[in-house]
Length: 137
Image (cartoon, rainbow, N blue to C red; front, top):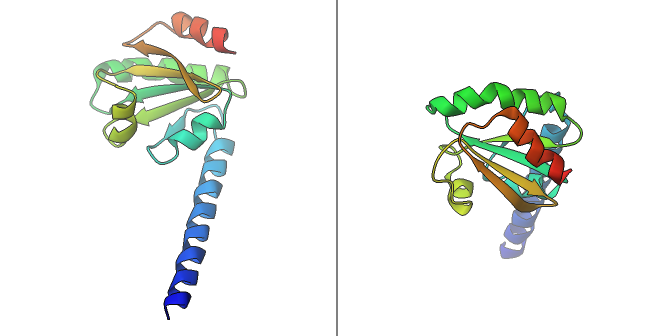
């Protein structure tokens, strides 16, 4: 019976991994000019799977985050296909917020080739964000 349990466990593990990959692929393909939603679970795979990524770290209760939201949405439409514009709710995903030392929000993390390249803290004009994005493209 132990061998059967081990086989079942391995099969279940494989099935869960396939579902996770399919979910990530669906999320990647269904951007449609809107920011991708990142979580502690899909964060690393997403970041390493895209050349340039902007991660908007935010929370629903944060007024400045809401002020920045239209800018993030515009950037997602404007840079669709060139830069992955994403959102990470720090209340729902405290692991990545802690890992990247997010002490205030909004904070934008800019990644190139899977590595953190820059950080922007606070409400920032679209033009300033674009300047940093263009340097990474």
